[in-house]
Amino acid sequence: MSPILKVGVVGTGIFATDRHLPSYQEMSDNFKVVAAYNRTKAKALIFAEKAGLPDNKVYDDLDQILNDKDVDYIDALLPVQFNVSTLQKAIAAGKPILMEKPIAATMEQARKMVQLADSTDLPVGIAENWLYLQVIEPAKEQLKRIGEVVGFTHNSTGPFVQDNKYLATTWRQNPEHIGGFLSDGGVHQLALVTDILGEFDTISALTSQVREVSGADDIVFSTVRLRNKKTIGTFTYGSAFGASEKSVFLKIYGTKGSMVIDLSNKTKPVIKIRVGDSAESASAEEVIEVNVEESFGVNPEFLNFHEAVAKKDKTLFKSSPRAAFHHLACVAAFLESSATNGDHVTVERI
Ligand SMILES: NC(=O)c1ccc[n+]([C@@H]2O[C@H](COP(=O)([O-])OP(=O)(O)OC[C@H]3O[C@@H](n4cnc5c(N)ncnc54)[C@H](OP(=O)(O)O)[C@@H]3O)[C@@H](O)[C@H]2O)c1
Image 1 (cartoon, rainbow, N blue to C red):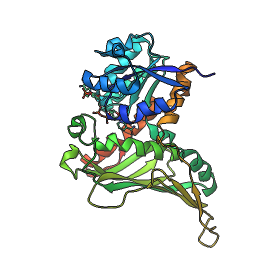
Image 2 (tube, rainbow, N blue to C red):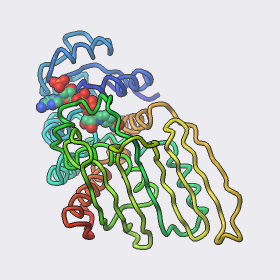
Image 3 (cartoon, rainbow, N blue to C red):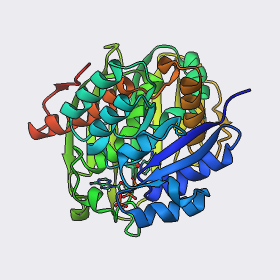
Image 4 (spheres, rainbow, N blue to C red):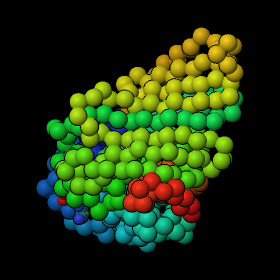
């Protein structure tokens, strides 16, 4: 029987309250939130009430929760410029830790995160829930049918949403993390595309800031070559436009067919595929509807971290710091390329 892992939550803000806590509560056979720490204690106390924690399990600092022997692992949901120092402390305390995306605020910090994770046998994860979307495995299966992949178009665009509670957070409006929303949300898209197709090698991009409230550039249009050298494509991301339909899709072109993974309706993703090496031999379009769970990847992500912690094997966790490094490195390459008017930039490897 799988053990119930006892979780200490650090940073009891919006996402901790609205998504992580409900996920832990839905999976009570596997997890129990047993302690919390937040900079503003009043917010931690509200979280504690929702989690059913006694007041003496709401701590006044990070060291106290790290030293709680009841806590099997830490789930940290902080602005990511705090990831390095939090990871250092967790390793010193011997606690596995799951931290939020993007991996870090800068590439220098991201390198340090990978170094630190490599230096320990403790499971260390970056919570990139899009790596666990249920559309990914069926998409990989269908991909085998369209021959060699020669091109792709990824598009994730939508209207600016004024009444967005995430946007109202001051650390997002004054981002220390490179690229602001381009890394905050963009790493999710990059996780999806690179998990299905492979890592980016070079990028030529232009980025721009549409909304002042974004605090940094908030749209990117780019062309990309994958590391396999054969595949070229485009990657477009931004939710800062005027009224427009929300459109999230990855179209993949192969020598023997093509497919589209359409995530525009988050709760009803579809894969559309056409097989054949020419217009004359093309089959009729097949439409595959994918059933999804409601946590948008968070529940399977937690179960994967559970497995790594319970089996004391950090290699079992898919969303590793090394995987997450690539996604931030792509954002860094977008920005570097744009600064030189779209020159091709090689994505940093580690
Ligand atoms: N995977 C996803 O889809 C997803 C979605 C949303 C958010 N996230 C991630 O979750 C994390 C939290 O985001 P959120 O939207 O929940 O934001 P939030 O509500 O602002 O939460 C941020 C938390 O960090 C704490 N904090 C802020 N500055 C701090 C400092 N200087 N020292 C110590 N603690 C500090 C805040 O404490 P106070 O209460 O004292 O301000 C708050 O508890 C971020 O890393 C974000 O990228 C992920």
